[in-house]
Length: 204
Image 1 (spheres, helix red, strand yellow):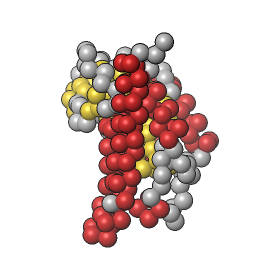
Image 2 (cartoon, one colour; image 1 turned 180 degrees about the vertical axis):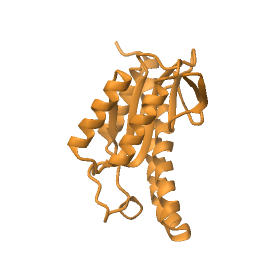
Image 3 (cartoon, helix red, strand yellow; image 1 turned 90 degrees about the vertical axis):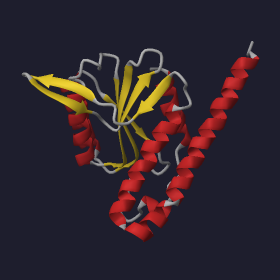
Image 4 (spheres, helix red, strand yellow; image 1 turned 90 degrees about the horizontal axis):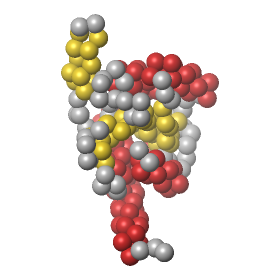
C-alpha cells in the first residue's frame, strides 16, 4: 500500500522537476538578450551555464546528493602533485561526502569536447577519492559527433579508466544544426531523458 509519505515525496519530486524545467526555459529565453548585449562568445558561455545549472537543479531533487563546482581533487604522478583537478560537476553523497559521479557538461557534444571530457575523466580517476563505483557522465543538449568517433572515445575511456561514460542528451532535438543556435530556437527538453538522468542519480 502506498503511504502518505511516499505520495508526498512523489509530489515534491514532480513539482521540483517541473521547477527545474521552468528554470531551464527561462534561462534559454534569456540567451537572446545575452547575445544582443554581449555577443556570440558571451552567449556561448551562458549557454553552457544553462546546462550546468540544470544539473544542479536536477541533483537537488534528491536530498541524499549534492552537486559541487570547484570541488578540487588531488592527483599525484611520479612525485608530481596537482591539487586542483576537477570536472564541471562532482556529485557527492551527503551522508559521507563520497564521490559518486563526475559530470562534464556542454551545450553540444562534439569531437573536441568528447576528447577533452575523456582526458579529464582519466585524470580524475587517478584521484584516490574516485573508486570503482564512481560514475563518469557526459551531459549535453545536443550532439554533432559521429557514432564512429563516439565509439572510439568510449573505448578510449574504458581502456584508461576501466569504465565507460554515461551519455545524456537532454534536448528533444538531439542532432545539432549549426544554423539553428539554441539562443534562437530555444530547444525544449526531452522530459523522458531528464527522468532517465534523475533515475540514474537516484541509483548511485
